[in-house]
Length: 524
Image 1 (cartoon, rainbow, N blue to C red):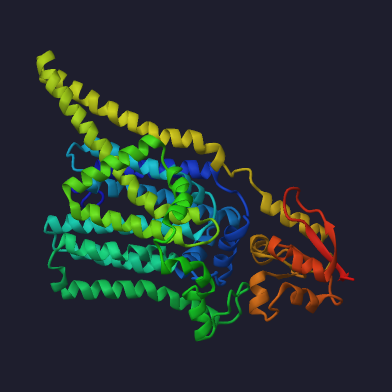
Image 2: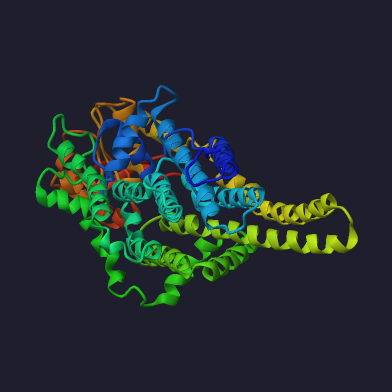
């Protein structure tokens, strides 16, 4: 009987579906129901309006997000949140499939159950769960990563079985890699490990010119998604959100190559410098992903994989090191989500350890059974009991993460962004100007461009200040003061500079959130 998924046992495929559905059910229950602040608000606004994202433009997410936003269910913001939930749930399913490729034990039930536990451990780890409840490019990025790793392992399985179409799996991995770069460049860090993997699977890979050419073409097609940014930038009508206005080569390069954030990459000149301090920030993030016994099992699983295939172990290590070093050296907000690829690569090792320990316990009890019981059936039952006990204890790990993390990840009642926007709209007179900053601009944009609310209001974000030639927040205020009512949502780093030049009155918005400031006149 042919499997539902090539080179995958049906029991494993069933486990992958089960984990995906379980994860999606929990994500739906804890999902943000409405608009969000910061990058979430942007991810809810840019795709449905076919606008331009912040660097690197994320064209694959933009195109897929636009299609997804057309679904006739719920509000647009919720649909985009749902896209993240579906993506991370599918990623958990691919973790199950990946784990099965790494498990050496032949017992179908043992392999499928251990792989399912690994997938669930990933699904309910802190960062995957958090990113599954809100719109964010990193949710589809981690799906791209898990598909890529599964395709690479499936390619090896196809090569070992001498499948005539084995190369197709590597071409698929190449296309996934290229498209993944269009979701988020984080997947590009896997390139080092992929090159090594090619020669782990086939030491003479360099001779396979036809396959190399097909893979190169597939990567190029995937990367070609960035052309969409250019075509959208030069097309009419102008995008409502036009980040960096990439309609010239210089501005296109500035956006796609993230030149705006070059100052955040200075640590890459010496990535190992001050490693102790950087690790002090990274260690708590990684430690929070799995409970302590889970990390112990991951260490055991890593040792088992190394003993069976040093090449496979080396590639997994390269995947992890590249991701961790990058994340430690990139000084950006909410950097925790950048560690998700490491969680996806390490979770399968937990399943490897469980399957190996479970098989060893089953075999030990079978040997004991030969001395204590006389029937083969009794001995098999005793062995199954031992293996099942190990797997049952292992299943407590994701169960514990689910129980202990539920309240922290439950966003089902969080409508703060919508409530804040509503409180602002109540205060704004007709034809007002709001000079804001990123975290608060994005929900204002969503209500303006998706819901069509307050079309009379002009929203000037800190990015618009650069793209529209204002240069500073004070200049943006000065350009409109005296002709239109001007309000400011003031970030801490601009407070001293703005208050030095302007007299302002404070208008309370949603309690606990930034207040609205009305510009009364120049400071005296």
